[in-house]
Image 1 (tube, each protein chain N blue to C red):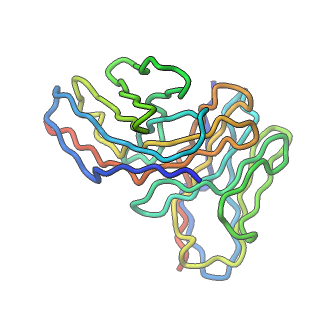
Image 2 (image 1 turned 90 degrees about the horizontal axis):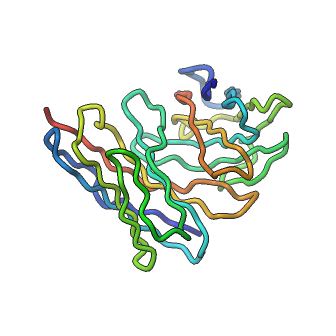
Length: 116
Length: 113
């Protein structure tokens, strides 16, 4: 079974600064996907970024980028030029690359607050 | 493109009752997954439906059941409600064999008293 650990329950950062959220996972699989989801107070889970384990290049989406260290089983999210709208819960999630088993395993989340 | 929708938004039930939650998938998606998110926790996978059949199940008892319809919409049914069933129930749709990305609805907040 896979487990996902987010060791930072809460973080806060000043607007326009850069913040990094940590995530580690445990799996014996070699092919899998990793995701970061954002859940604002509106509750809707929004996909932020995706990383395929077979790709060495770190994924980037505008101000969001990841540092994927497969050997260390680490998958951190960096938010650059943080904005007030980035305030939310952030969840790291794992999915095994297997047809018929497309379930997400989530961490417990990090509550991020952007301070004006 | 229509996003994932869920109904109702909130629901209050009494222990022992039964509840049905509904989800409409994003257009073009053929797979629906259901998750339970207890307060302060990450979502937990309940089950997934593809082509109207259950396609994977998490560690939830049989009183949690579901359906998927030909238009790919889905229902989650919970029988004999318990206090611990109080949670946010999230539905996510995806395209089986696609890019493995799941898109979530706004959730249904269920309170069991």
